[in-house]
Image 1 (cartoon, rainbow, N blue to C red):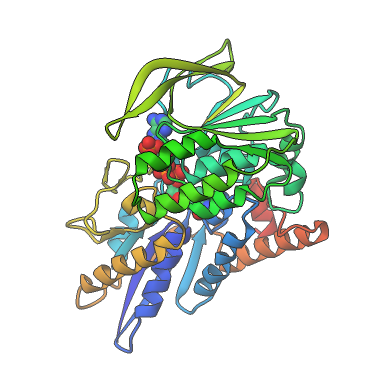
Image 2 (image 1 turned 90 degrees about the horizontal axis):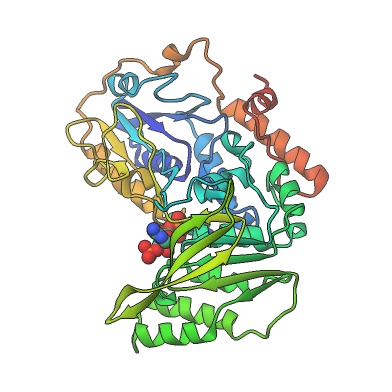
Amino acid sequence: MATFRIAIVGAGPAGYFAAQALQNSATEDQTFLIDMIERLPTPWGLVRSGVAPDHPKIKTVSKVFEKIATTENFRLFANVELGTDLHSSDLVERYDAVVIATGSSLGRALGIPGEELRGSLSAADFVPWYNGHPDFASLDVPLDCDTAVVIGAGNVAMDVARMLALDPHELDTSDTADHALSALHNSSIRRVILCARRGAENASFTSPELRELSKLEHTNVIINKNEIQAARERAGTEPEKDVKSNLDAMSLVAEKDATNNERTFEFEFLLAPLEIHGTGRVEEIVLGVNKVMEGKVVATGETKTIKCGLVISAIGYEAEAIEGVPYLKGKVANTDGHVEGTNLYAVGWAKRGPSGVIGTNKSDASEVIKLLISQLPATPKNKGDVAELLKGHTVVTQIHWEAINGAEVAQGELLGKPRVKATERHELLRLGGL
Ligand code: NAP
């Protein structure tokens, strides 16, 4: 019987699914000791700090993570940062294989003048702010303006715009971080405009998220009927299934009777951001008007200016580099999840870039783990593990995390919420009994 030590760096969905794939691959002849290393005092990655608080069902996947974490031969080492508390070489030397599952945490920049102004933010900062990520709890989010513009036509842009346009009372029973909930209650924003640089037929939203918009009770959702009609014509008589489904969902919204709520969420297509203006903070954004010519999106040369006090860009992410791990074009340099010539592997967004929903990581991790197992040496290294290197360091293990989780959930029960998140590291450690 051979027992291999595998380190997984990053306790998000991709990391857990990699652990599950290893657990499912254990045989009488070959087993795995899995050590999961996480920078934050809390696991679950984007399920905790990314998924929108008004989407609690998506978060139920955390039950699967907890089952994986409480299976024999799995250990959590949270509150441990690679590059600071440990080096990737420490793992590479000791473990038979190291799986990088650290996602893509940096927001891509628009690269336009005025982007640095106060009130111009990346979704990569705004989303973890409302989700209680400890590194973003004190983010400056000025909500003292009437209009916000969100750039991008993906599900992150949709989450951001919806969170800004919802009546905050709808979030009272959610796990939105307390600081964000209170800021949203005090927000002056009444108009949120989501701007896509291409037409509706090219939007990256998924249709369940679009269909959900028709159910918003306290927000007028506006999509121009003519734009959807034009998008249908451009998409042709046999559009791809996803495109058709998206356009059908957008038509549902576009054709709904007008409502007269205080808050409005508008979609604008064929507008590309050019410049943000303001003295000391965002006052307006200038967008270039695009059109579609022979299937291509081109600039018309015309511009449209929107007065606003907040601009949030949600145009994709790239991976934050870890020392000792090679990166290329915003992700770990890998072939099918393997870093050539090493015992390093990558899964999830760190491997393929920021695409796909949580479930996508399951099949993806399973393929990478198959490859990893096929490349294992005949005998394990037996060179120890990280526990010996972390003596004296405050490690959040599974038991500590369960204490944190239990305390947050218990606090939430008193208030009719799924949990009340602790948003400071020292508070999280205190809840964990550390
Ligand atoms: P995404 O789906 O790739 O969307 C990025 C958007 O940004 C695209 O519309 C893109 O337009 C636009 N964009 C890129 N560069 C731009 C620029 N310079 N100016 C203007 N627009 C620009 O990425 P995402 O929204 O970050 O989502 C990442 C992944 O997470 C996706 O797979 C998404 O489905 C998933 N997710 C899922 C959920 C859910 O299931 N509820 C929630 C959140 C995220 P072009 O197409 O023109 O490049």
